Length: 263
Ligand code: ARG
Image 1 (spheres, rainbow, N blue to C red):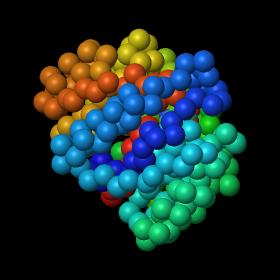
Image 2: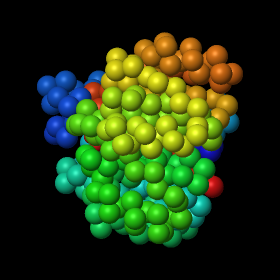
Image 3: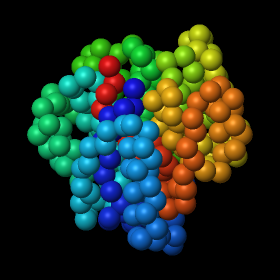
């Protein structure tokens, strides 16, 4: 998993509107630093042996760097997101990329945050709702991609996408921030029989869980030493990268990379 990724670039990355509590139009990314940060992410994925497909960003799409929200993909099928109005101009580019690359494509008719709220774990799909995803979108995804849905409700706008709250490290190992999920969702996650690492508020709100793991190498943000140490203790190779610019838009490592190789 996570050996083929779709990424964009930070060329037009700006904070033009506020659609999550981390964004502030008075705090803009530094263009050169953002480009360098994104390049470093791409290089880290390549160094881990992953393949990266690139979809160039468009000037009218200041959040396009966060490719994870484009869709959720399994095999040669993609369910396009149904994004907040501020981000809808991205979707035609996403649709064109998938169609042009031989994918069968549908779009969720209901609000859907793409992979931001849809994390694959084998045949399970950890499916977020409560913020940007209408639970009816889960049924659309389950039908088209054949996943078994594990609905997980996040508790507030700080956790606007599930990929800030839960991380899939491997088929048997997950990490999560318990307080960001409501009680039934926590129980559901604990009931999966996977090993669960708990991450505290400070590291979780610093995008620690917003990581990419292929089961061997974990690419994650710097500034979360507890989680990084726990992962190393379990034998994983951990690569920590600066995400100072990306977090100005409310995102991190996971947000910039859409998984294309979900089996
Ligand atoms: N500014 C973007 C938004 O609010 C950030 C998206 C981050 N992506 C993610 N998968 N969490 O839509």
